[in-house]
Length: 240
Image (tube, rainbow, N blue to C red):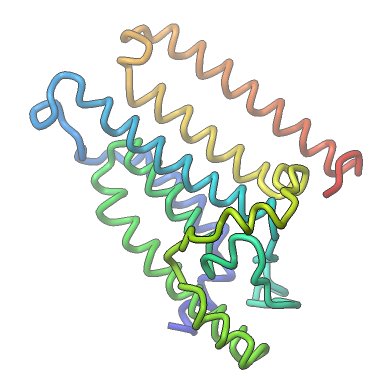
């Protein structure tokens, strides 16, 4: 599993692109009119948005409080120090938990049985392998300190007990959250926009012209916002 994790660690960014494209593969529905009635579409929209937004909130909270570098070095697992502050006091992999919830949420939002039933389990297996590879590195580098951390904090489950004290004792860095997340936020919001407007004609009362106008407006607005934040970052006018 460690070897598998090291392999996928190198290509994890490509993996996300592949998974997002998989959302648009034709698939049997999870929620159908026969099973849930005429307003069946409300279920995937509400449940999907709650889950995927929860994942993004967890990522945002984690990054804003205590950022951990997950980029590695030379496409290999690497860490300068052992981060145990912020949300990492409550879960060893809150960023990955956020990613899982974000993808599961958009999978439900797209009402895709194929994505939720096939691609999500594959994604979970790959993530477990990546985490085991990272833990193997951390255990070898930080030894007893990492072992003690593992004894205190669960790998996947977020224990929210004491989160108030954590939040009270730290400063939320809004700029860091924006600068570190703007790529992820852009792709995520574009995906949600396309799923809602392409998969649910009920939102626009089956008016294709209105749907196309809304798609163009939202995508243009998101693209302009993305380019603006990118400009601020690259120009050095916004730093964390």
